[in-house]
Image (cartoon, rainbow over all chains, first blue to last red; front, side, top):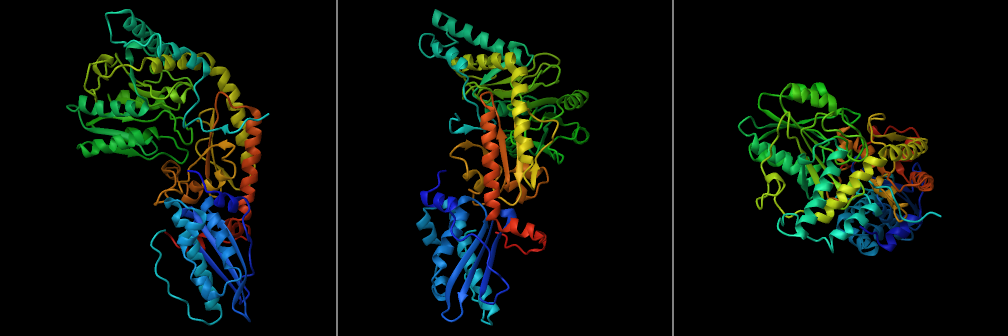
Amino acid sequence: MAYSEKVIDHYQNPKNVGTLDKSKANVGTGLVGAPECGDVMRLQIEVDEATGVIKDAKFKTFGCGSAIASSSLATEWLKGKSIDEAITIDNMTIVEELNLPPVKIHCSVLAEDAIKAAINDYRQKNGLETLKFEESVIH
Amino acid sequence: MLKFPIYLDHNATTPCDPRVVDAMIPYFTNNFGNAASRNHPFGWAAEEAVDYAREQVAKLIGADPKEIIFTSGATEGDNLAIKGVYEMYASKGNHIITCNIEHKAVLDTCKHIEKEGGEVTYLKVKDNGLIDPAELEAAIKPTTILIAIMYANNEIGTINPMREISAIARKHGVLLFSDAVQAVGKIPVDVNKDGIDLMAFTAHKMYGPKGVGALYVRRKNPRVKVTAQMDGGGHERGMRSGTLNVPGIVGFGKACEICLAEMEEETKRVSKLRDKLQTELMKVEESYLNGDKEHKLPHVTNISFKYVEGEGLLMGFNKNIALSSGSACTSASLEPSYVLKALGLGDDLAHSSLRFGLGRFTTEDQIDYTVEQVRNTVNKLREMSPLWEMFKEGIDMNSIEWAHH
């Protein structure tokens, strides 16, 4: 199966690879997936406390090229968004942007889950109630 | 100058040797006859060519030409051997013993037998990928009619102790079938010395054409028969009907002849390259060799690079290097290789594996390039792997509650 050019580009030049200081109160971390399943994503957001805007986002991913591209793209989209906007990022927009084939949809689901997990981690750290999300269907 | 892409997936298939192609070409055009046409020169020429190829094939495995049944490939050979014995020897019993890292053509045929009411024992291989002969012997029952054990494994290249296995089969009067696709043409295989009663192999894994293979069926001590799985003109001593693929068979014969003549030299050359590749890649931190180190095909190695995922790893260089991975990140189940799992490897290591299959036309330059590319890509991906970071920080990954899919 051939990868789309956008997937290849993110794989070769991943955006925002790295680690944020998870001990900081304004950093939210989401770790999703499992080594046995062949993909693990860690996505982190750093929120500007004054404006509530995500000022930085980093990822590290163990997985196939589509998983790496999905998380790389997610960090790009997160930067500059408010938390409320970030919550609305849908896996299918990642699928469309990267032209993921059906067998790779789970990579985009994982990225969406990672975003939600990072937001909830941030909310929890700041005394906010964690948001309940509908269970993702495809994994 | 290196020419891309480099092919290192010779367990999947091999290119046709140009000498094989040259031998085949006249049988597409001038000598196009049907080998079963007994009454004219076109048929005679085809029959003569098939007879000659049958000798070439038989010679490679130490068999009599009459013991060679031409098939469309090893999947057909596996089916014909297992189903054919099951039906032919139904009055003697219905139990078959095989193992859990056989090729799907054997495993799925055995599942079919189970649906038909047969009983199948699937032996578990040891951590090194080999059969334990004692366990095999313990599994034999009065109703056992067939032992089906592969000669060498396609993913990890391990070679089973066929002579020990056949001694047990003989002792208990049970027939031994071997899927020898990966072994024939690569290492010395002799059906008499090895004590094999039925054996499937195929041309395209040994520099011959696709779509042609053979099933060896022993004719004496004991005389073995299989029930035909295709009805028709009664070709191949009634065991496999269908007009013979004359050009394919001619090519298969030539491929066998070349393998026999050049095996010793080729093994020396290729195993040296394989050893270099393996030694260099095993220097990479947290790399693991899969399968037995000693009892292994000369051209194969299978290595896991922990904390990077195989398909992602392949993507780093698969424009230039053709390799395969034990990770299947394309199916809904995300199940990694059942062969690697059977060795007791965790799913994480199975997902991190690459299979290297070298071949007749592999060069040292290609190996050097591959080492460099694999090493660089592993390093690059580990830089972006959260698992690698945890490993480096000394975090116990078993202590983490993973969200399992």
